[in-house]
Image (tube, rainbow, N blue to C red; front, side):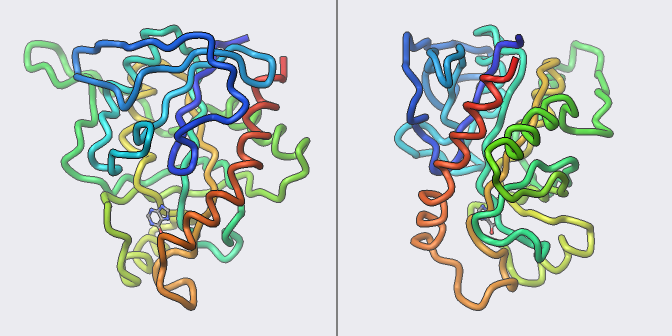
Length: 246
Ligand code: HPA
């Protein structure tokens, strides 16, 4: 079985149920990862865990050192990465609490360190990114979601914005015209960097609010936190089941 890493997003700075056997500080040519890696057993299987925003949560989406994070996981032996992302729902099916395993993404971020091929002395490599997520890994997540009995969407287009502010209603309307079903701030460049390193990568997205202009109320942090708390139990169950599947 592949060596799995889990990147925990907002609401998952710690992986409850993870029996940490050791921690590892990884130095990378790109600087410091968000935190030391926690290596241990989850759902009866070995896993590497990294909280994307640090632990406790201290890094905004645009401050995360995505290059260091992915590099550290690869260095520590990860072969497959399960990324957990909190998102806003754009498509009507993506109500608060809904889970989705996106199959596509659109990158609206800017100014982030987004590639390992940045050395002017090295030849540029253009990775194929037509299908940004690993289909076998997506299928594993979908099988686990079905086995856990959680309503979910088997596909979705994830639009990644720069943040940290939330979007305007017009921006969300534009994303919707572009075909986005979900909006988040951390899906990129993480997915592309994983591909550059040859890591299988898939995303489990939890909807924590209606995207701007899609709900009836102002989007509040309290509302987001409540949805995170309500949804993370489901997320943990799904992750444990993926790891436990031979
Ligand atoms: N927009 C962008 N990122 C998010 C949202 C949102 O509405 N909710 C959670 N992450």
